[in-house]
Structure formats: C-alpha cells, structure tokens
Length: 345
Image (cartoon, rainbow, N blue to C red):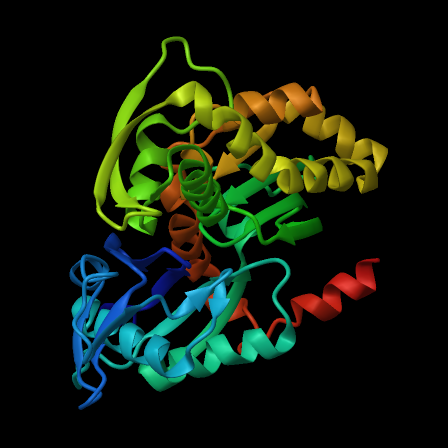
C-alpha cells in the first residue's frame, strides 16, 4: 500500500501554499493567488504567474488571493487553485489514487471554517482530509522535542495571522491567534509612505520595502531604499528615498497586538510550563517572523530568549509532512479546535 502512497501535507497560507509529498519533502511552494477570465470562468494562472498579475490585469481578468486571515474567503477559487496544485504534485491514475491530505489551520479557526477547508480540499480532489493546528505543525517542523512533559512556546507569524501556543506532550496546552501578521506590516508601510511622502505604493512594493529595509529593532547600519509609486495628489509617477529608521515606529506600533497577546498567554500559562519556557526559550516560525529584529523585540519585551527557527517559512509545511506518519491514528474531518478551546478555558 505504501508503494502507491501520495499522502500530502499542506500549509494553506494566506500568502503562500506549500505542499509536502510523503517521502519526497516540499515539492511545491507557490503564492496563494489565482487568475481567471471573468467572462468564461477559465483559470488562466495560479501561483507565481498569477501573483505577477495582481494590480496589472485588464477588465476581463481578475487576479486574487482566495484566502484571508489564514482561512478561506472564496471557496470556488480556493478549490480551483488547490485542484491545479494537486495536479502539479500528483496526477491521478489507477496507480496514483486521490491523495489523503493533512492541512494546517490557525488556532482561532471556527468549526464552520474547519468544515469549509475540508470541503474545499475534497472538492479539489482529496480522498481524505485531516487537520492540524498551525503552532503544533510549526513546532514539529522546527524540530522541537514535544514527546516529554517539558513546555515550549512557539510563535508562528504568517501573512494573515499570528498563532501563539504553549506545547507539551505532543499537544497544545494553551493557544491563541491574532489577525496581525506580515500583511499588517505591509499595510503599515504603505500608510506611512503615503502620509510622509504623498506617494501611493502597491501591496507588492510595500512587501519589497519590508523585506529589504523594514525592521522592528534598530539595525547596526542604516539602510535606504528608493520607493516608486503614484503621487497621491497629481496622480503622476513619483519616487522618494526611505530610510530604515523611519519605518521603526509604524512597524513596532503594528506589532503591539502580537506582543500583547504573547504576554497574555504567558500570564495564563501554569508556573511549571512557564519555567520550562524560560529555560527552553521561544521559537519563532513563519514567513512574517523574518522581518528584521522580531526575535530581539520579543526577547526584550518578555525577558525570555527568542530564536528564529531554521527555514521559518517552511516549518508548518515540514510539520504537516511529519504528521503524515500519524495519519492512521488521526481523526478525519473537523477537529473542533474551537470546542477544545472552550473546554480548556
């Protein structure tokens, strides 16, 4: 049976979808974007090619992100995108049946959102669907030892959501999710540049600025970048020079909800687990965690060492891949995270 296994671990992210194939590793890493013809309904592009169309399409073509804040906002488009990704990583034949999949979901997901994700994956061609909480998958992908009773804290900063969890004995002891992450940083940068320079920049430009000179902690040396966009008043193309130090204040302000939630989770954590976290430190995962200085800022505010995991943007996907070994012992369908959270409180 294992000979023809094509089980998949899927990190279905707001910005990026990654697919782990059992026995092969991560074989697909594409932006969660789809472009289609509005007149015919035909899918034109998915992934990187579709992302390049964002903000550049003619009237009959729409390019969009079908996920928002870590959950599905457009069911039909998500199904079409996933179907294309499934075809890319594993064609369906008599020797290559429909895949069983493990999909990561945010800690704050509702039962309705869980069901929506399962239905989308089934409609796209999955044979069986299992769910795993993103912080647990991230911890597995980061290589943390969760078998024992020792506590670990993982903070997974994605594009739409930041998941914070205390983990122990292969389970989630305490978790929370806040809808502030990489996209909020992009928005803060775009708003600042418009207010200071009178220039309107697109989402992709704001993300490029964040990656090149954005930061939450002072850099050893100043960095600058030339920004190009549209003049807010005249409507003509314009450019300006932005310094990294200018972005510190708007970006740290955008990060406050994340820091507040981290401190809140630490306050709710039992003394034994809190002592373990102080000893083991905090692990940062997710693409949004790679913004300069996030680990320094969290360590400064909490007084606990904080380290960025290796390949942080892929930890959840690797964790979904590792969980494939447990698939025969996992419960199919909704895992009722919302209900479990109420029972813990």
